[in-house]
Length: 145
Image (cartoon, rainbow, N blue to C red; front, side, top):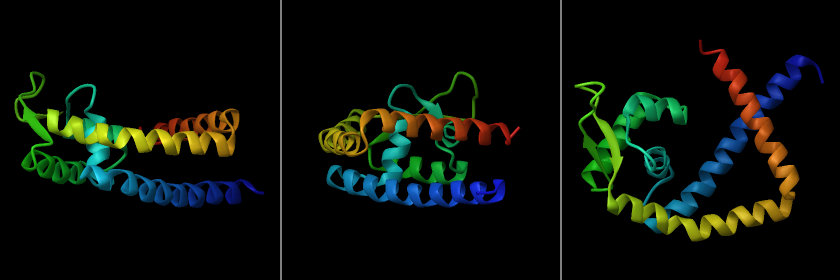
């Protein structure tokens, strides 16, 4: 393959993979009363509250999309806004106990699918695939500067 063909194949494969992961995520999230998008935003703030802009950067989605989802999560009691000591107007999004419980309801089936993927691909091949995706992401992040 030429460089152009490789670039196109990487992009098209990534688009397809994104759609496939979103479909799997929707299937995992729905029984917990979430959507894939809600799970994505809650997942970004499981360990520490973040401003909307920080979630958007972490997840590679627009700030406006995150704001809309965060507002919905807050309305549903799955997240809350907290004061941000670093910025008076940019509130932090934090997961609530109810939001954490919803994410935890996903864990058992998530573990089943993770094992199925590792068993199907083999753990070494899966690790190589993840490393390649991470390396590609780092390169593309560098283009944003």
